[in-house]
Image 1 (cartoon, rainbow, N blue to C red):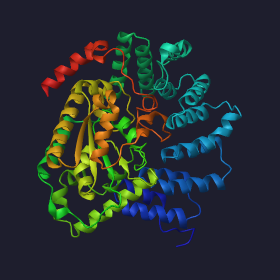
Image 2: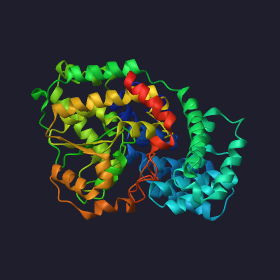
Image 3: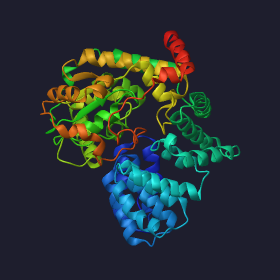
Length: 485
């Protein structure tokens, strides 16, 4: 085919991704990236990121930045994609010259502040975000990002500006108002006015809950199918592929300490920094939700199960390795990894896992007060949170019974109050020597893109007053929901 009549179009690529045909999508993506001259490189890079092909995405972004005299919007889009592809340092390098020129464009400083926060440069991030807000005080997402990094009890000016911006927010879109509610709630919490904070958290959660697609019954059915289909490790699934450095899985629900533990393990010389990369989900994107929950049955009718498992394992290692380059074993703390764990355990028979568990009520509150970006539609109502956490506990108890030698359970409280002792247990489980560098996790420059970005760049600390005392109404709702589900 000629350049005027290419074999594939971008629409073919989008259709393959939406249909879960990953191999086809990758082939079309490679073709468009190499054989077609007139193609939207930024669009291709965005699609590459969506299917975890971050190395190709970076190559496309490099080509775009070299070949084009970029507009400011294109530059910001390119920098944003670099950050999504795991290269916030490249995003900073691209945007820094515009910031140094003092251009009056808030997107420059928001992106720069967000990227600096991801690599742990918190004070620089705060400065850049405040510049963004001085130009665009009605940017809810900038306020939300700033709120995760500052203590408003020590920043009266920022608190006044946020309060004023919220008063002018009434006519804004609901999605934007949600960001304001959560930012202002955090500010009131910092300042010790928990009644005002609770009111704002409720308003933010109500906006989010109106868009939630979480269904308790569907989740219950999915977990029941997983448990019924995986009653014992199936020896027929022990394929020939053996990873040279088996990955490590961190299991646990959001806000239970998975990011903290991942940041600590990532400071070990034998391990790669943890990340919420979608390598496993993308390696399974050809599977329906039913096939994931009934993976044994899927393999039983597959014409070449060993080859399928080997392909998935190799794809996972390549994609995860591109996201977290280094010589060590990959540490995976992907969201919802618990639901994919039996597949992960089958792909990597030598792989070890750590399950970190936090008090259920504290986890529930931490989830409720967090404005998750995605994949947490269950976190906006006490009854949905209770249902989700109980089902995840049921699933983890099943995996612990199925893989007792491969999964080590640790408590978040122990990691917080006895970090060295807990990390020594984990290192022993992983057959690694303990390294004191893990205790200096807050100094790591490894990118963090979760809601814990502000916390994991600080030393360990315990809030001065328990959340149950600060927000009794939520815990009353939570206890009723927990007992009723």
